[in-house]
Image 1 (cartoon, rainbow, N blue to C red):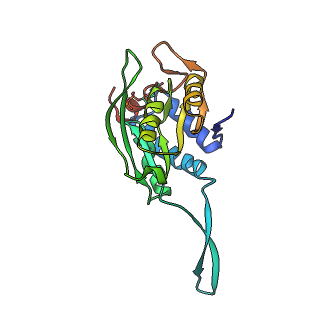
Image 2 (cartoon, rainbow, N blue to C red):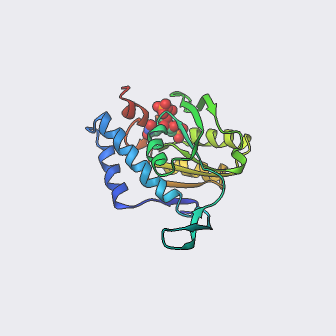
Length: 209
Ligand code: PRP
Ligand code: URA
């Protein structure tokens, strides 16, 4: 599918299956999300630009590859996006972090913003927006609009589960934003939940239900 990378690595798929299980504990769910965050980070950063620099090993000088450009920005959509953050930061510890606070109104399914804090110079950096769930995509598109208003030009989106409806909306409104996901599920139900899905990611992660 154009603009979408399905991360079918066996470790990701295995861990996702464990997370979907209704019997998975809060602790287990959170730990798995963190581990998958790390694996997805590996995939989403696979083609970062490289430049050669001169270094000196104990034996000799050499030209060696290093990641070029400004530090990345990780942008979790609160709350559930935070579940990816530690795993991603463990691979890219110098990344900047933008917090995007949104909740989905249960009646209208529209995203309501309650917090936004991002580095000033987002226009010069690659932004990786993260949220485990891409359902209607109202939250993801609201986050992207907000970042673009601030000048962001180079954005990628990482999720765990996507609904076909959410992917279609993202492709229509933000075709410049590539999506990485571990699975594309069947559909949304009447309440905007992904089916078969894994339920409410934020509640399962924080034990709030
Ligand atoms: C969930 C999820 C996404 C959003 C996805 O968050 O973490 O942000 O729903 O749904 P959408 O694609 O239809 O917008 P929620 O609003 O439940 O907030 P929470 O993470 O604070 O629980
Ligand atoms: N938000 C979730 O946490 N889960 C869904 O299935 C849809 C939106």
